[in-house]
Image (cartoon, rainbow, N blue to C red; front, side, top):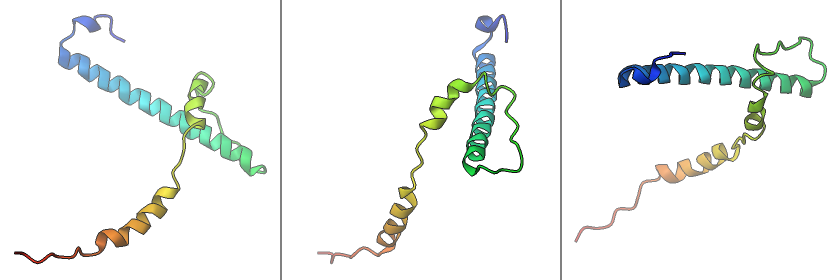
Length: 97
């Protein structure tokens, strides 16, 4: 990106680093969305519209390991609903001595 990156002041290097991280997050998120849509298309079987692949889909296939191993925690909402009544119950007050 910048040939003289090492000679730039710290603030400028930090700004460039933040910009690069933001761009990478955008690229990764777009690939993940496309990957998810392609997988949903396969599951549905008879989808009427064809999903268009992300421009760099093939180049970023190494992200598939990350996407396929993501675990969703569906137990969390159940656990929270069982905890809410316990959290909202008033605590017993002990008499002061």
